[in-house]
Image (tube, rainbow, N blue to C red; front, top):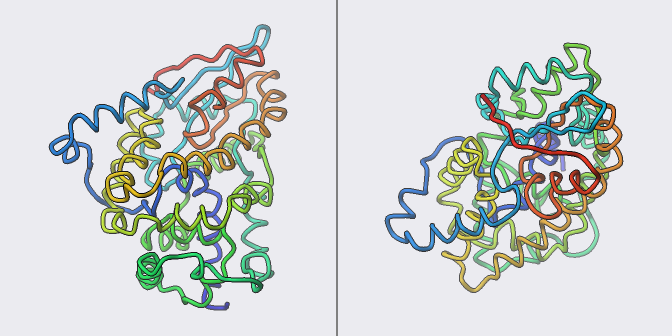
Length: 342
């Protein structure tokens, strides 16, 4: 298992940062470069692409990165949907930085201290990251998936035997991001959320986590292993376009087309694997990785927002939908309104 020790910091950060992307796209879909796929897809299937955006926009609060949260008698708070990558720092506008720096408190999915604790545990407790009992990951795959799995490991320089015994959350972290992402993270690159948290910490603003690292990762462990395998390598054909899918997702995020990121993943998987029920697979992942966690976060969120002046930054896909944070907050009496990021 020592082959993965140099990666433990990158994988630890990626395991937390990657929860949202594993849930939203079937197949490994992040990378560091690429082109926007939307023009290409429209050229070959304008009806299907229009239907994809229609489905996305039918979801409540499907668009928008920054939201104002009000309750009578207290200062307004702000809710930012983030994109869990280092390059997304470029999308943080001067307005967003100023809102963070003026906040009474800052709230994130997992605190910086918890991330450090996760990295330390991964480095010292092999049983935490690896399951030495029962069938390994390879036993859950088709031969086509195994070949894609081997190729993905080769590109990451990871030993097959070690990866075969990874627990689901660690395997997801390994496959949900490309080699260049893991290398950047191991060299100190910070996801957008980390950069925001560190800026708050440097300004003396309390940094609050909504959950511990073990609770966050348990959401991945609750997903059946066979579902996880299909989600990660169910559409091996997509591995050839991973950079393009990532670039498209990042553009959709910057445009504020948040729910379209989910719909794009479903649409692409349906194109290359019509035998899979991509929407059902996606829904099973979403339930654990988004819906359950959103509900669990509400007591801490309500406490901070009721005091006013909070700056909350969580993965953008936690915001849309009937069980998204915006609707959950409205149900608790908060007024939540979309505001421009500029």
